[in-house]
Structures are given as structure tokens and as C-alpha cells.
Image (cartoon, rainbow, N blue to C red; front, side, top):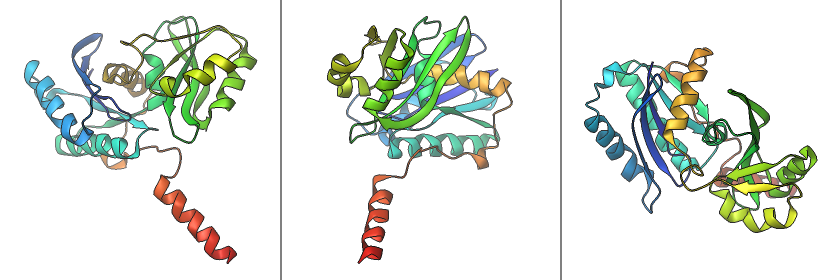
Length: 238
């Protein structure tokens, strides 16, 4: 199975091509440019370097959310446009699951943290039981104290990763009561190769879908939508 994967759910933009057990190419960048500037040129670069015939891919895997609303829309629109043009299916890979998959084979509890602002985080809890990827707590958006309380209740060593680590590091160090560590630089941000490999597994489970049916999973309303709801609530009260 040949999988083309995209991840633009956070600050990082990443493109990867995986065929069965081989990572043929990956381009990941974490710099001050918008994904609308970087994603397609990165895709072109990877395709050119490996002489990829786009018609040869079997499925397009995309990090479907949660994450940056703009980033998710760019990634989903790119994947959907390509899939429609090539008549290929899409497999939607949960962003937080894919982040946790970076630490394949870890014996510790894995806790990805993405900054969702206002002391909230997109997060979840995972572990590997041998080679089996297991979800302890499915991806969600919660206050940082809520996920730390859950971790403390498990009583097991945990490893944190994701862009939320920088934001919440001080809180973690002051409030996490179990042994913990932070993933190193080459594993602590989104990688399209993880999206590809996890997407391949989801395909085997029959979770690929026609391109027309794909949509991002934001987990919560955007800030603009939340403000509009609050304004409507205030208006009704008046």
C-alpha cells in the first residue's frame, strides 16, 4: 500500500510518502510561514525527489483534527482536491493519535499536548501494549489541570510531547505527581510519516472514505463561532 500523508494541524507542516514498511520521503518544516505557502511546494519537492506518479498512490492520509482551524482547512482542502482529481480515497487520521504514534513502542503512558489557548489543550492518553496501539483516553479538548489530574490518578510514568509542552511545562513540573519526561526534538511535533503509518492501519480497518465525504474534526467551535454564540446569548438576555 502506498500512502501520501499531509499534516498541517499545528505549527509544523509535514508531507510524507510511505509504501508498506518503507518511508520513501518526508519533508517537515517548523518555521514562520503559513501552510498555504509551504504545503504544496513541499508536496511537489517530495514527489519530484522520489519521481512519484501521483496515480500510483492508493490513499491520501490527512491529519484531520483537532488543531489550528486554518491549518486543518488547508490540509483537508489540499487532500480533498488531490483525492477528487485522482479518484483516490482519503483516510482521516486523528491529530492527537498521530502525535502519540511518534513514540511507537514506548513502555510509558503517552500524553500529547497541543495548545488550544485559554489554558486548554487538545490531548489524550495512549500506550503501546507490545506492538498494539491502545487509546486510554481518546482525543479531547480540556483544561490542562484536568488531564494532569487524570495522569496522576493512573499512577504511571508519562511522556509528554507536542507544541503544548512549552506552554504548559511549568504547570506540569509543579503539578504532575508521577514520574514524567518530555520527548526529544525529533519526536515531539507532528510528522506526516506517523500520519501515513497510522493511516495505513486505519485503512486496513476499513476506515478510508470517498474524498467527497471527508471533513476536518475541529472538536470545538472556532473562536468566531463561540463569540457569535455569546453575543446571541447576551442579546436574548437583554
